[in-house]
Image (cartoon, rainbow over all chains, first blue to last red; front, side, top):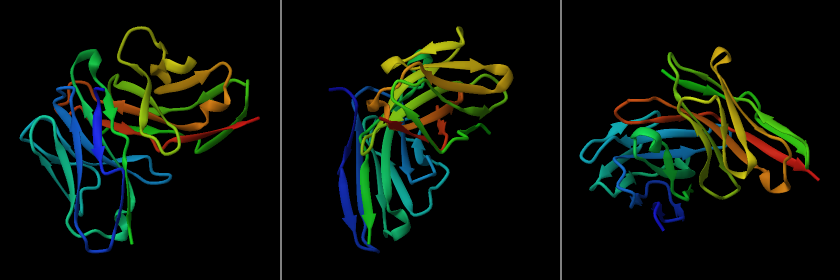
Length: 114
Length: 115
């Protein structure tokens, strides 16, 4: 099925550990995004990639890094996890063109940092 | 910069009753407008979107939304809710022609259904 695939679905980390969240889309979309979702705060943009080879900071980038490996893949890395990074992380992609404009979301990664 | 306000954090309605979820946006021109729904433990699903033209937009699952430029609003409606509509609903605004095609989300409205 076409769409956005995120791995893993669940993860528990100890404070200070590192990990990479993976995201891949098969819709040939140019733009990709990482959001975090916390209760009462909606979705906040962490980083985004307007096109292959470019990345930019969003609203809450501190403590994260990203890599746009190719047009399909956009990964999010936590170098030294902190309890404040406990959240649900969503990856999304966007064709960014005409009436196809709009996000397709992955199913999310629920991350707990203890 | 654009922003989205959903003034209702939590709404409870009886099954079969009508529903209206409020959304106000801030942007200098007409943005792209969206409503997404998120069931517990799930990702976000697009209900409907407005780009231009007819201000009343029909979506999936019997939902509709009306764009009112004068009020900077894009409220979501459903004539008769079902228990399966219990979920969190997010209004969102996108900026046309921006290089990164970013979409900004409201903080969400949680909908509960009373049997």
